[in-house]
Image (spheres, helix red, strand yellow):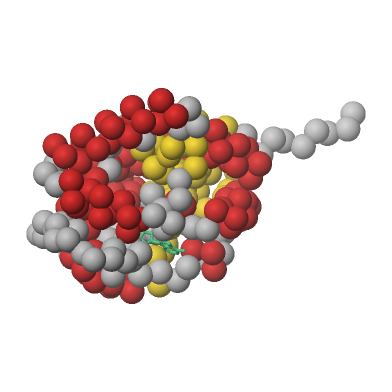
Length: 252
Ligand code: GEK
């Protein structure tokens, strides 16, 4: 049972930079579902996409796995297709808790939990790679290289599912959609104090891009197909597919 997120309910003199530490881990499921519109629908969608793209004897990566929600969803939908899941997070408390959660559900699919920075992970023989709200925490200048490495490690026909908080270049649109997100948080019981302290804490930690920047980066990484498959206010999920290998032309 996840505890209620009350991390920012008391006034702080100075709000520190957000960290994925033990206090966050304890309230994480409650925090993410009350803060990220569309989170559950994205998990459901990732589950539905799994049988379409998982390839037998390939690897599936959940990068920035937190408590392993994506890993568990994918594992359920693999239906014992022989694959290995690699779940990575650089927060020791997250990885520890993810391992405990995962062990509570029986499955034939092996999951390897790795405590490391995703920049150090070699992606290989991959059919599905998921970055579910993780890229936004990576330094912007390192994002393109990470997507390139993911593209290189995907098998032909493999996919990257990338979910992110985005911003909009047009200020009136940004303001209106930001308002919708604020209303979502208020409706989920967050006070004005909690909202403003959390925002200050995430400042310079969560650095968002626009939809266009993401699509441009995916194209530059090599993906032949990329599109938004779900958007809830300023939260989107992209599906990017690596082209099937085309048969080499035979010389007549
Ligand atoms: C979910 N995917 O529930 N290397 C590894 N992990 C990192 C790094 C990094 N460089 N930077 C941040 N993280 C999950 C939700 S949460 C999203 C993902 C959120 C990890 C960080 O420790 C945290 O667990 C996760 O990325 C981001 O579907 O809290 O908004």
